[in-house]
Every structure is written in structure tokens, then in C-alpha cells.
Length: 461
Image 1 (cartoon, rainbow, N blue to C red):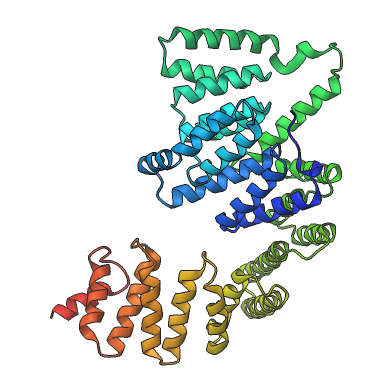
Image 2 (spheres, rainbow, N blue to C red):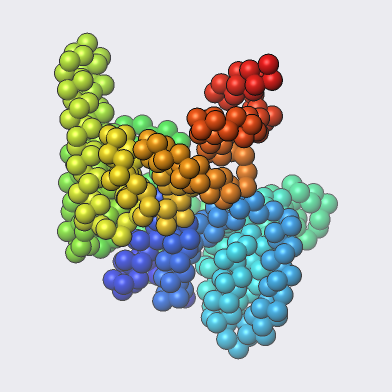
């Protein structure tokens, strides 16, 4: 069966995809995974959703320290489910596919589960799903000869000889004396040479020269998009291509986002904002993520003006423009808090601005709400502690910081910052020994952190 594009799915599915896509951009991986999974339950052939689902799963897996032990645990805990999947592959392949996806949610790079998905996808007549999954896995296991062989065969069986050839070339580099691998490579090279650039298709029934030129144009666009550094010529071409994509799929908000990003990255701020405002109109409702992007671009516009004024030695004008920027940021964030009362990320951002303006009680109110956001919980607890410190309510400040530390297993920069502030608090209330113990925790791992060396060494004196 053919892949389904975003423009071909119902509005509900498209909205879930857009929410999942934006959540991933903002680092809210759990919500992104939920949305992309829901998309695939409604339309398993929406490969774009599966691609972002796998990416979010892998990011989460790696962030949690996933490795060989995690693979082993997921294989053992998923053993009974894997057996059920094996029994369903022939009779209920689509259900088997859904079951494997649940296994991959916690361990998206488990090779035994990936092989199961490959079998289920092929049995369901969805080889594109198998190809996509194996290709993603190969990015993380580039020397896995079994993955290379399976993916190469899938490419060959699905009229993609050039990609199949690349797989078998790598396979032969890893296994130079393997006769089967060499035969696969020779076969792939022969088929690829016959179909090189697709010219042998000219004149065959149903194939047009314009179709081939369209494929070459798309390949050129993809090559430009993948460049690490995009020059002005690339930008102009990509802008026109995204305009064309929007005309073809006017309901695809992500094309409008991509176009706005191109404009903004090239300092065409008003054009970027216009595109995003059009996206709001097309979606039929205010989208908090698009609002956030519009705000970010407006801030970029302010920053560009401030840089120009500073370069022209117009210091007073630059300071005035900075004040305008700060006022815009505060008012805009306040408006978005009112507009989206359930968006905890915005509450956190507004809390920081309130704290910076010494509006402490109002800041506490925002942070007490934003601590329910898993991504912002630790920082929210930290700021609540800092607010109580500003109000000289030191016992409650200490309690909040201790709560934050208890939820941080690794001594990273965030934990160092909180331990340091907790040390200062203990010192402030006369609990010198406890203050010293906190400074020593940092001193033993990072002697250069702020002034802990001076504090610890003075303590010993």
C-alpha cells in the first residue's frame, strides 16, 4: 500500500500530528509520543508521524541513559508480548504492528523488537514502514550486518536499487569474504546500472519525462534542505519550494512553519510573521505554539534593530529600543498566560519575568502552577525557593530547594546551582556546618564552581 501524506488524512489526525510535532520541538517528548501514536492508530501509513514518533522515543530513551542493560531488560519484560506478536503476524498483521509499537515505546532501538516490526509490516503489505524503521535503526547501529542485509533486500524488493546497493556496499566492507553479500552487491549494481537516473523508464507506459524531472527537482530540494550551511541561492529556492508545497497542501501547517523559519533565519521578519498569522487563520483556531513562534520572531526583530543601533554608536536609541523589547516581552507573555491558562510552560516564563521585576507573590503563583509541568518542575521549585528567600521566609525556601535536589539524581549544572543556593541559605540562618557540607559536595566535583573553593578553604581555616 502507498504511503499516506499529511494532506490526505482527516483534520483530527492532522491536528494531532501538528500538536505532536510542536511538542517535540519544545522538548515535551511524552506528549509528542502520545500524539504521534494516536495519529498512527488512526492512520498506520502516515510515515511522517512514525518518523517523528521514533525520533521522540529515541531522544527519551537516550536521555534516560538507555543502553545494553536497558535493551536486555526490555527484551525480558516484553518477552510474552513478543510471543503474542509472533502468533498474530500471519493472521492479524496490523494488530501485530500496533503491538510491536507498544514494545518500541520504551526501547525504540531494541533490535529483536525492530525485527518483529519488520515481519509484521511486510505481512501487512506495508514494506515502507519496515524500510523506515530499519533505516532509522541503522543510523544508530551502522555496523549491524543483519540490519544492512535486511534493509538492502527491502530496498531491492521495492524498486529502490540505488539505496539497496549502498547497503550491500557497506555490508561487503564489513564482511569482505562473504560470498552471499558479494552476490547481493553484484545483483544490486546490475539493477542499479540499468535504472540509473531512471532514463530507461523513458518511453515506458505511464512514465513521463516531466515526472522524472519532478523527481530530480525534489532530490535537489532535499539536498539543499540537508545542507549544514545554506547560502542565499539555496534560501531563495527553498522559499519558492515551500510556497509551492503550501499551494499543494494548504492545510499542512508545518509547511507554513518551515517557510516562516526560512524568512526569519534570513531576517525577513515581517514576512515570517505574515505567514504564521495565515497559519492561524488556516488552522481555524489560535495555536499557542504558533503564537510563541510569532513572539520569538518579534523579539528577533527587536534584537536586530538593537544591534544596528549599537553598531552605529547610537547608544541612547539602543537603550530605548531595549526597553521597548523588555516591555513587549512582558506584555506579550502576560497576554498569552491569559489566553492559554492551561499552558504551564507560559506560566513558567511569566513567573521568571515577574521574579526579575521583584513581583514576588505574583511570581510564586505562576511557579506553583508551572511545577506541574514535568519539563519545568525542578526550575519551578528552585524559583519558588528563591522567592521565599526574597521574602526572608528562609525555612520554606530551604524546604523547596531540598525538594528540588531530591529529584535530581545526577550532579549536573542545575543541581550544583541549587546546592550552592541551599548552602547560602544555611549560612544565612547560621547553620554553618550544613552550609559547609553543601559547598563541599560541589567542591569535590568542581573546584572551580563560583566561589566554593574560597568558602570551603575558609571554612577549614
